[in-house]
Amino acid sequence: MRIAVRFLNLLFVLVLAGCGGGILLDTEDIVEFPDEGRLHVAEGTPITYNTDPPTSGTHYPVPQDGGFYTREILPGYLVHSMEHGAIIIYYNSTVTQAQQDEIRNILTPHLGNFATVIALPRNDPDYAIILTAWSHWQRLRTYDSNKIRDFIDLRLGKGPEN
Image 1: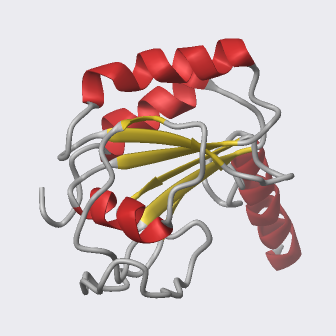
Image 2: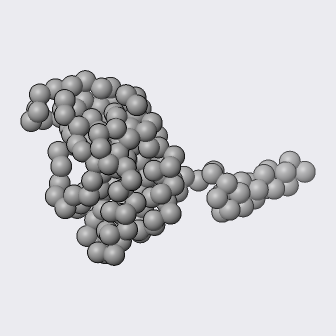
Image 3: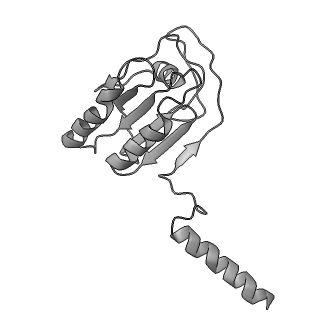
């Protein structure tokens, strides 16, 4: 009898996980990390983070303004923006021009210095999109505008200084 109950419990867990019940962590789920602090350092100071891309920690005194960028930006500026409640959208070379245009449209209502959205390229062979917010990230193997919008809706403006 005990073996049958254990088998049924195992079967239930496997079915629940297969249905998205949260037992197995999907690499596209939002992941929360420990807060690495909010220390300011002089611009240009080398900074090491526990996550790549960073989700919190030491940063420069000047945040990055919201917008769509076609160049890399030093993490120290981006982390300060996340402290202000920003969302960072990293996109790789598999994201098409039409998808980049859609990202521009998604972030346009969220420009400025607080609760802003910043998009920039990242050379990442595994993830088309990586979304970061203060102490959180979501990595997407393929472009998904609904997941991008959901992450923004959930995390925008949730930095420790916002």
